Image 1: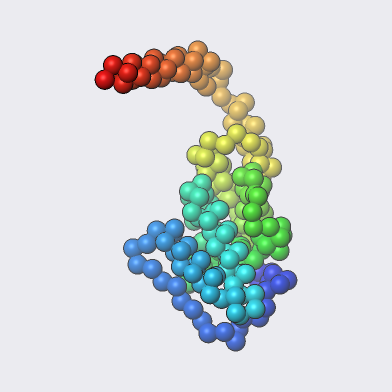
Image 2: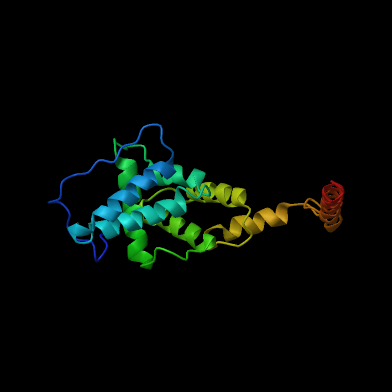
Length: 193
């Protein structure tokens, strides 16, 4: 299924192809290159805006460190050829812009729901596999909200936990008190010196 073209994105087929390549670079270094391209492409009537949105969404999803499992689903496919990871993320970027018309102010729960919608509806991936990846990333983030796409799994997980498996208030209070005692000892030593 072809990805939707953003309404304000012009046809860039007549522009020369630009290849951005990095060696031994983390995702964050690639993002710097995208920002450089975005800053210098405004002359091409909207292509720079598309790259800016791509870079912003890349920062939110790939560079945030919150979506390790989902990022693998988002960037690859069994039939992928060279360069298609970029094309998959560009398609996600265009889809996200067409769907929300926003580049900022995405709550984590809303972003998870949007990723689920894109991966299952636009890309046609298996919903259970996508939910499993989202759940793993969501639990690893330590967030406590309830994204719609994970509501049933999170509710089932909470009910399955036996009572007393979480940290009790006394344990947390004891940890806080021991930290405060340690701070007091440091302050006394500093005052004596």
